[in-house]
Length: 241
Image 1: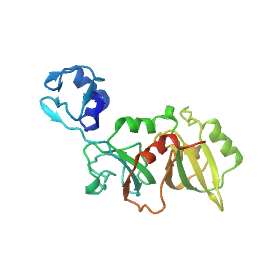
Image 2: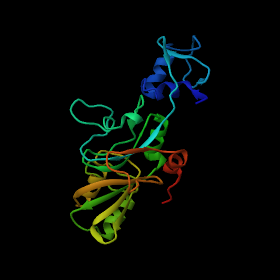
Image 3: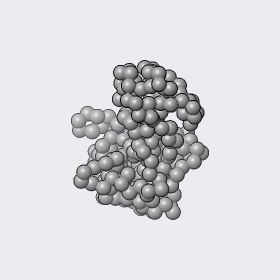
Image 4: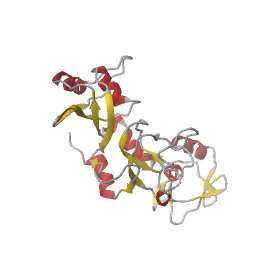
């Protein structure tokens, strides 16, 4: 990994969240080459420096980036006492310390899910301000109208007054009860709630792309693949609205 910020290194190991890691550093619980360092943005060389948290050596595992075709019936969490999670179904050969799903899909929603141990990357993908759009294929109970399409462009407003950012709704050719929905936010049940405002009930939902990365047709449900640098960059920079 070479030179990296101290807080980023610790967060990448699943030690704690980025904000909690900073608190540990400020408290003097982290040393670099046996010297206490209290600056979260201090640069350390993962090839030569020895970083310790409370006297325990912290490794320098490389970041990994996976794309999963999430099946229905599993939840987007790292662990749960009652439900099977997406991390539970990651094959052993892909297991790494600190893996977590990027954003979330509902338990009954299928499709493209990113899994990583890179917190900065996850924030870049999920932050609404970064406007990385996610596209969903939805089956609904009645056809959409041009008014529905315009309402999405203008920003759907929920009953509690929450206004969604601009989104894009379009028809699927040859199926009047199927639509594509493109959003850059990840609020709870957002796509279903947005369509419900327009009096449409979602019968089936699948995420098919994030940014410029599309879910391949040949990736079976429950399986995942590693992403290369080109594909990772395509998530953030590859989409044009």
